[in-house]
Amino acid sequence: MPAYDYVCHDCGAKFEVRMSMSAYSSGEKPPCEQCGSANVGRAFTTVNVLTGSRGGGGGGSFSSGASCGSGGFS
Ligand SMILES: [Zn+2]
Image (cartoon, rainbow, N blue to C red; front, side):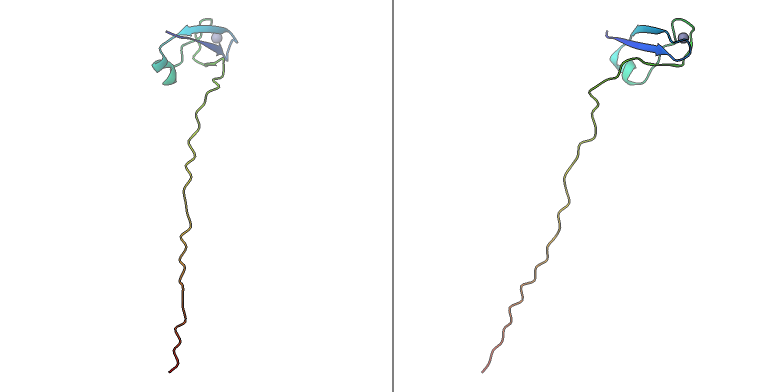
């Protein structure tokens, strides 16, 4: 089980919490070990943030009307 670093915004304590990745990704926050406050945040920043994939699309539709003048002279 991986460990994650948290920092308390109330008392400033840093502590390490082991939790499952599913609990971590669901935004579950442990209380502070020092003061028991729930006002804690993750102490490290994850680098691999996946942004949305950019899908290219959109094409112009060209309507080319070829007009041949059919002129006949008799
Ligand atoms: Zn605290």
